[in-house]
Image 1 (tube, rainbow, N blue to C red):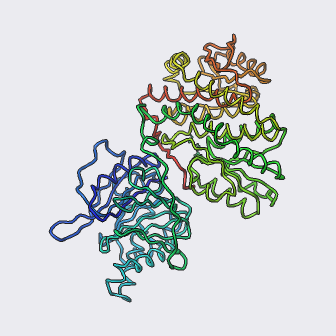
Image 2 (cartoon, rainbow, N blue to C red):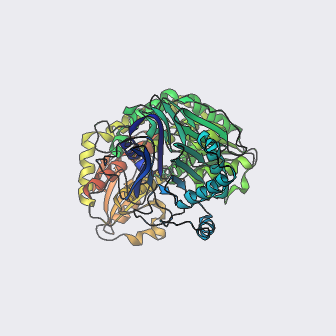
Image 3 (tube, helix red, strand yellow):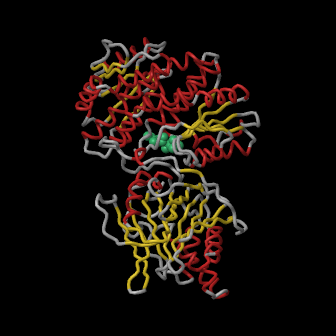
Amino acid sequence: MCGIFGFVAANPLPAELVVDALRTLEYRGYDSWGIAYAFQRDRTTTLVVDKRAGRIPAASPAYGSTTIALGHTRWATHGGVTDENAHPHVDCTGTLAIVHNGIIENYRVLREMLERKGHRFRSGTDSEVFAHLLEEILTTSRSIEPNGFELESGHLLVQAVRQAFAHVRGLNAFIVLHLPSQQLVAVKSTSPLVIGIGPRGVFVSSDAVALVGHAQRVHYVSDEEIVLLRQDGPLFFDRCTGTPSLPRWEPLTLRPADTSLGGYPHYLIKEIHEQPRVIERIIRNRLDGARQLADLIRQSYGTFLVGCGTAGYAALCGSYLFSRIARRHVNAVIASEFKYQEHFLTDRSLVIALTQSGETVDVIEAVQAAKRRGARVAALVNVTGSTVDRLADFTVPLSAGPEQSVLSTKAYTAKLAVLLLAAHILNGSEHVGVDVLWRAVDGMEQALAPQTLDRIRAVADRLVDAEHCYVIGRGLSYPTALEAALKIKEVTYIHAEGFAGGELKHGVIALIEEGSPCIVVSPLDETRADILSGAMEVRSRGAWVVGISPEPDDAFHVHIPIADVGDASPLVAIVPAQLLAYELAIRRGLDPDKPRNLAKSVTVK
Ligand code: F6R
């Protein structure tokens, strides 16, 4: 959450470059945005700050050129959505600016201490504390070591940031802009930061996607490091000892086409359409990964799939897949609840973390808990180099390409594909798994075809003003019902609930009234007869029933046909629901990529 970006360049670059990068990062938070940069006129350099509540405007304000700048796009935690609370925050002298991702848990006590020392706060955020704390430390240090050289060389600045960072509690990432020395410092704990170098300068960002077009090589900052960014390049230090350390550079493999809209009006619809190609790549490139995952499961005594939100539903679906295909009990646990169940873990346990971003704090904590107990950790991760990717003993990269819509779609089906393959491999039926996934690729194409879309659009026309919507499924389709409801509710704000079909008569059916929309997920598996009975029961109480199913049925008012793809049905059945969510968002005049209150990459609790 919160996107942060900065650069130091030998030759001036347009400061608007920061705003462009923030647009790429806006999915990390879009409550407010802001930039700070050094502006030189008549030999005087001043710090210019422009920050505003609301979304980044389509046309950037004209700022001029600069050799040093940083910016931020905010997902509010402490302090309302106002111009003052937007980042960057500056110290009392106006020569230090900071941007922050995370929560300073002890900000109250720090703020009181700093206010007692005379610091003037302008915002209601926890973040501003860091600017004043750093100012305080630098002022005190200067009085001890007043020579400007130390500060110019950056070491005093690095020491001061180390000291300030040691005072703040929580999972935080900061970039500091120090105007007098024209340097940036980057430091983090858990919250991600990546450094990039390119021909035009040194860059730092919370996410590698914003470095596309700027950097050729990247280094993912570890919690043990602190980085000084200067015109002649970055310098790395150990955060605890302050001694120099060495970076691990790797090529930035993302290309501009990976992050562009590619002719689609929104990222959500682009990413929904990318799914068949993503699954195809998994079949071609990830069989080895799935085999190793299957081996780890075979060797383990107790396997736990953990994830949040959509990834949590992928975990739940995985537990059904391993049960029915491999006859193997694999637990699915919501990552944020995992720490309350970690007592089961031993050094023979296996924890498989499912995460698109690799930065979800609850997933990271689950992984850390597993490691503390000596359990092995595997991960299915989309963002290479992310925290979970680096923490895991073994990773299967999903390689779905950047997910830029806040809604997770292609990473979900990619996770399901890897889990389905691993289940078949465990069962000794790898070729069946591969075959069924190829059928799913075709099934997804059919679900995306214009004939299907026409039916989905007709359903969207009917549901556009609905207040509630229910989705039911059984067995393998129960996680699909939960995920379909999540997609609809998060992007349309229609209250959508997914239920296990068998639970209807235990209370849920009381919600059904004349015209209640009810989506029924009904593949041709052992759940069919029972789920169709449920569909009839809600229909006879007035529900308007939409069936997502390979075959029509009298229980459906509208039938959305999908291919019969056996155990891979969750990969195909979710596609019409994703499309419906998108179509509804458009009809309701909502931004499908940036739903209210949400942000991609949930790095705070
Ligand atoms: C829903 C959605 C979220 C994420 C969840 C986990 O569309 O995007 O529910 O799935 O925040 O995120 P990752 O997979 O990055 O750990």
